[in-house]
Length: 109
DNA sequence: GAACTGACTGTAA
DNA sequence: ATTACAGCCAGTT
Image 1 (cartoon, rainbow, N blue to C red):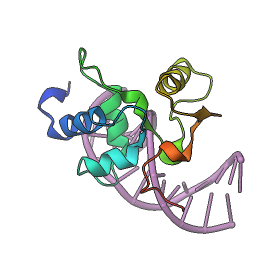
Image 2: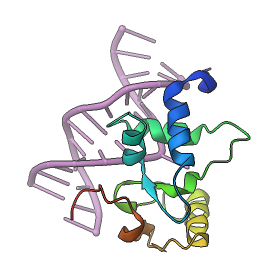
Image 3: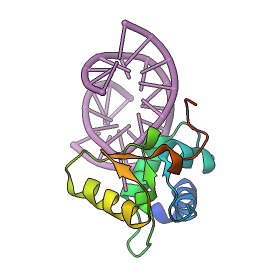
């Protein structure tokens, strides 16, 4: 069993996620870059999947590239994330977050 | 150690 | 818009 508590990469990821301001959304790739792990978006997914019990992290502010919610549409976690985001004033439409809430460093534009 | 898996991402057709 | 595929890499069979 991996020890998450002494894995600096995961710690940093959790820290970065915890700093995402309310009403703002970031992406897996962006979080990875900020955590000093460029190109390792998947590790961010792993980190969020294994958040230590007791740590209250705004995991719902992390979405896929382009603002797409990572969970399959219709699933419980998908709805949960959409609900939490809307509760913060974030526009979620068709499983997507409006561009205006995403980091500017995204492709396109 | 090989093969798979996954809360991902970019490129191409 | 959708599908396919190559990178990516820690964890799990």
